[in-house]
Image (tube, helix red, strand yellow):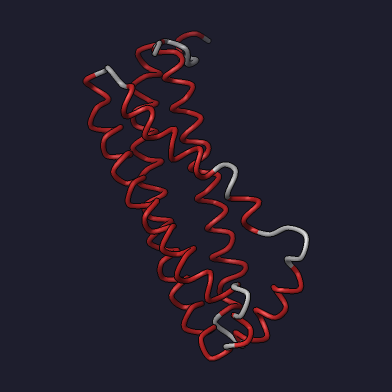
Length: 168
């Protein structure tokens, strides 16, 4: 892989991770505080609100691709100076993937599953669990983005594609 292609793909991963992070942050600030208050009423409203589209459409197309890109960059990297950054990013992405799979399978299914509204007593606990796990997920996403950004900065300095102040 050429250094310029690696630079562009690394920047793409950073942007994708930022997209994911800020999507989760938006949910954490706007939606989830409402979930723990009057949980059955809130989830009934959301069930009616998300009829055509929902958060899945926002996250699913990009999130898996970004994680695969992080692992691909780690696997295809031949630059020894970037190994620690890509390895840390790949490990954080692996933990992030496992956590997200757990959140979707075990928590979101209790909140938005087919029979979730039939069991309102479980909604509040699921909402609290989602809030706590989402904080951990945002920390892991930010860490992955940080490691990828470190790799990007090193590549950018080497390839000379970035604009430097002395060029003005």
